[in-house]
Amino acid sequence: MTMDTVRIMEEEGVTHKNPIVIEGLPDVGLVGTIAASYIVEKMKYREIGYLESDLFPPVMVIHGGKLKSPFCLYGNEEVVVVSSEIAIPPNAVYPLTRALADWFSSINASLVISVTGLPVKNRIDISKPEVFAVGNSEEAVNRLKEKQVELMEEGFIAGTYAVMLRECHKRDLCAISLLAQCFPVYPDPGAAASAIGSLDKFLQLDIDVGELLEKEEEIKLKARDLMRQTALSASEMQKSAEQDMPIMYR
Amino acid sequence: MTGKKMGIERRIIKATWGYNGNLEPLYEVEDTGDEIIVTFDLPRVKREDVEIHTTEDTLEVTAKMTEAVCWERWGSIQRQISFNRFRKQIKLPEPIEPDKASASFRNGILRIILPKKRNKVFIPVQ
Image 1 (cartoon, chains in turn red, orange):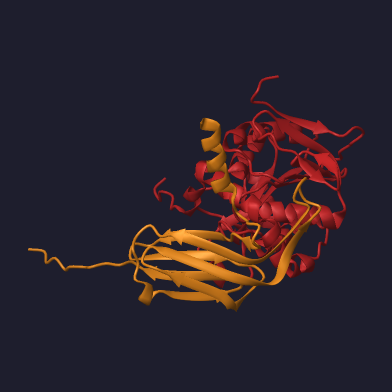
Image 2 (cartoon, chains in turn brown, green; image 1 turned 120 degrees about the horizontal axis):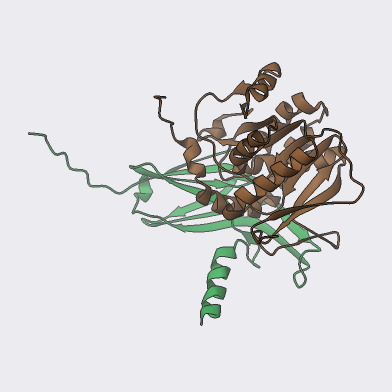
């Protein structure tokens, strides 16, 4: 076992039936993290494992007096949610995505959905953020078209979810990313609500986002420090490239 | 010496709240060329409770919350702490014209536009 390995530690007795994976790791606007936490809470998913690595900061979380890893896996036989309470260190992105993609492949995941944000400058003028999607294969794109999710046609994508699409592709895993228009450096529960709306087209969990929108201010206050950490990590991940224009000649 | 220095730096980086009830807001500074635009995320704040002060090279924002934030059963020494306002002072990257500054507040986002101090001279092209 090398130092740069990420290990997936599963609880005993956990079984999977071609689950759909929701990856909600911290990124712009904490869209995925807020959406993943809300889904776990609303669906009452139990903790099914955690991630560990020497590349992660030496941090543990205490909830209700219990010691926990900040990188957790939740779900049931049909759904797996990957979430984190701390920012992903930039040097852990590749080992983390490789380890997760290997594990998704070993549990025969039917679809991997990364939920994240698409930073937009005029977010303040947008009342209901739109959601765009990227697929990692023809099959993934067809699934997005089938669910009538608008595709991102041109642009750069950067960060954990971008690498996740590629790593899944290498393992013949169907993966998509859902990107909700969001504030780049402020927690964005409104964007998370839009993302959940699109996510539900694949999961059919019928999640009501009313409470998420009602508690918007409370969530923003609670997520303040994670947002700050994530913004610092993001600057090392070329996240600003997402606002650049790609070359038009191919 | 290194340890002491690290300690000080760490405190500077991590000081996002104080024992005086002040919480540091998330903010973003953008340089558009002619202006410096600073936005602040101020949840639980009403427009009338925002105070902005500027000089040529500093910006200070204080905003009272409608309801205090209270963290309980948190940490080993600090069992309970509450915050009732945001406060942040920023050193601006370039001198600005305080009299020409403007601000707007919508959905908890404060946006302050600070025109840069400039003595523009037109240069004709021969």
